[in-house]
Length: 332
Ligand code: GTR
Image (cartoon, rainbow, N blue to C red; front, top):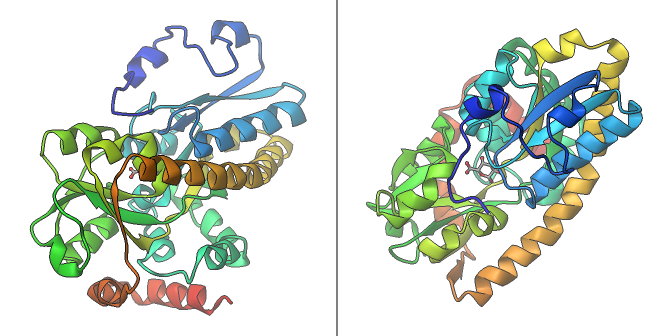
């Protein structure tokens, strides 16, 4: 569960013993030759964190215990944007993040998360698993990252505490939290709401105290954060599919042998199936729990007016990004 309490990164950096999911403390592992840290915003039982543990397990197993990746869940190392910055200058070795905040560091990532871009989940996976998906991973190098792998994150929809959203008109005047992403802010503004960028960990109390009216996310995050308890109206409009990504610091990777770099890259890719499976199960559980809680859920059957409202976001893309969008759409 993650309502927003955070252990400041400084506590960890200054060496207070932290208990990891495997029951070991930092002291227990001090004789391990290579110890690397991975930052994760979600709690230990969330499917992406489960995918991180699987990645760490594969790396440890395949390196015969020579390389150990410690997963820090619950935003212990900070919120996503700050973590990405730390990965960029090598203070954190890996992170699993949403590509929304990452696009501030590598703008082409906006093309991969445009509203209503994918026909369905299969289409998105075809893209991510194609040469284009690998090109995206590789395109992070100039920004100081090595893109490793993709995780599932379903589709994002709107929720709020004020009224059911059934049409674009219903957004008028609502204050909606967005990730620290200019694209997401533009998306919400295009619908007529007021976009409020804010780190994930602050959203629960911001809704509870009325600082914002709502936010948008997938079923699992709406559930695990308990936002569903303070924002009971959920409109399934599925405006974006925003893949999750695991990235490494280029500084960290450059310090490793070519063989170890390959081992890490392969282990990351091989952890994808595990996460995708865990995602499917958790998504079902989240949906059932939210329905049982009596939330008011509206399934938007006809999203044509939502799509039309978002056209200006496509028009504002640079010609290069428009070409990538076309390439994505052409993947059948
Ligand atoms: C979740 C995602 C997180 C974070 C969060 C948010 O779906 O898994 O990494 O980006 O959304 O809205 O901040």
